[in-house]
Amino acid sequence: MNNFGTRIYPGLIHPIIRPLDTPAGMPWSTSDMINKRIMRTLTLNIATSLDGYIAKPNDDLSFLKLVEKEGEDYGYAAFTATIDTIILGRKTYDWVLREIGPSHYDNGDRNVYVITRIERPAVGRTIFYNGDLAKLVQQLKSGSGKNIYCDGGAEIVNALLEDDLIDEFIISVIPVLVGNGRRLFKDGRPEQELELISVKTFDTGLAQFHYKRKK
Image (cartoon, rainbow, N blue to C red; front, side):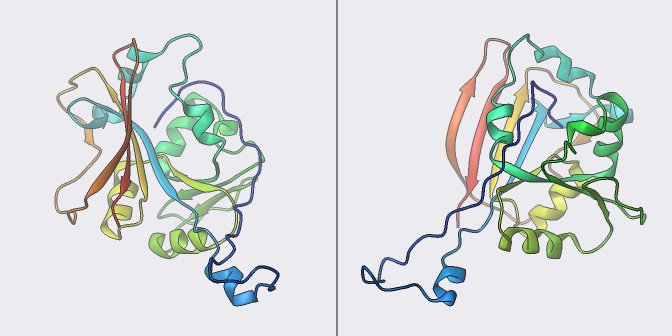
C-alpha cells in the first residue's frame, strides 16, 4: 500500500480508435466500435522492502515512513489521475480506514472494490465484493472508464497473477531489509515475462520500477 502525497481523480473515458482499414468518410459499424475499444489496464502500484516484503509481522507498515518527504509523492498523484477504479483486499482497506480515513479511496469520484469473504453492504461507492475475482476484473476491463488500480494485498496480487490479469507493475522499493513479514510475491505462480518501461530513483533512496506484461 502506497501512502504518498495528495490524491487527485478527474474523470475521463478512453477514446475509441478508428479502424485503419476503414475508408475515410465511411461510418463505423457498432461492431467496429466495440472491437476497437481500448481495454482498460490493471496496474499494481505498491511499495515493498528491498527483500520483498509489503508489511512486517502484524501488518506493520511503519517502514514506509523511512521515505516520507515533504512535497514528494513519488508520482502517485499523476498515477491516480489515470484511474477511476480501485481493487484491494480487506486487510489493506481496514488499515487505511483506521490510519488515514475512508476518503483516501472513496472520494466520490471512483469505484472501490474491497475483496472480502464476508458479505457486507456497500458504503458510498465502496463495494465489498465476495464473488469471483477474475470475473470481476474481466468485467471491469471490458467496460468503459479510466484504468484500474490494484493496491494489494498479497493474496489479491497473487490471485490476479494466477490468472495473468495484471497488465503493469509499478514497484517502489524502500531501502530497507525487514527480514520477515508478508511477502509481495508468493511461490507457485506461473512464469511471466515483463518489459521495462522506466526506472526512477529519488534522493530518499527509493527506487521505482515500472514494467508492463509482455503479451
